[in-house]
Length: 187
Image (cartoon, rainbow, N blue to C red):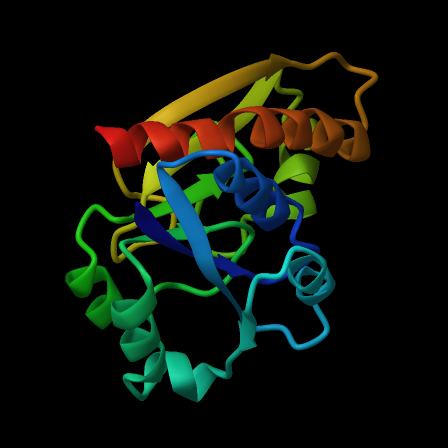
């Protein structure tokens, strides 16, 4: 059974969905959630699911090997589920093609630094897009530029607000993210 460590920064709905999904399989198990935001709701979700959630600071991530050491003990795969910091090169090098992210748009559109959550949905709306979706991709040294694993689309209409777009994206994330992770692990 493979071990997954999830990185999250916020509410943790994707982390929760991934934990619940893999609790029902023999493919993998979420061993730990790592979070850079001590006030994130993901801590409560992890507590309710009996999964250890560790808060860490920037220096733990960027100027020491603390997080790398945790990952080397606990992870075969790393999943970014609403995690907002760029992954340091030492972690990318230690886990080649083993770090997977989900992005709330159809990359290469609307990717890059600062393009997450409602920031993405507002720009999608402002540009009058007729469709948007999710992109599940490998992580490399640049924001949202790793090889694409999977995309799913949803139609938009001119009445869709950024909040409505967010709802449509959330549905796709919940439906596809754990299944695609499992396919990558099994492949």
